[in-house]
Image (cartoon, rainbow, N blue to C red):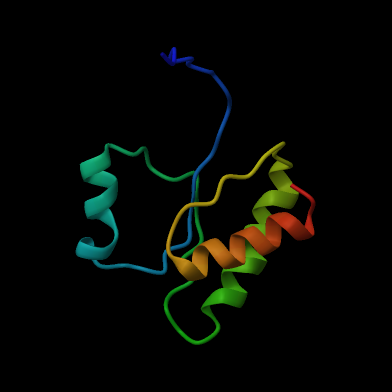
Amino acid sequence: MFKSVRLRTDYFIIHTGQHYSFEMDRVFSDQLFLPEPDYKLDVGSDTAQTGKIMMRVEEVLRKSKPDIVLVEGDTNTVLASALAATKLQR
C-alpha cells in the first residue's frame, strides 16, 4: 500500500493567456479551485503564439531561476514552455 507524502515547496503559476473566454479559461480555475496565476503572459491566439509563449516563459524562468519546471496545458503551451525550460536547463 502506498502512503501519501505531502511535500511543502515554493511554486508559482504562469498563465499564458492563450484562451480568454470563460469557457476555455476561468472555468477550469474555478472548478479546480486553482489560485490566481503569479504571471499572466496574455499571448493571445495568433500565428506567433508558440514563439510568444517561449520568449515570455523564458523571461520568467530567467528571473525566478526555479529548480524544476512542471508544464501543464494545451499543446502549444506545453511545447513552448518545455523548450524554454530545456534551453535554460531547468
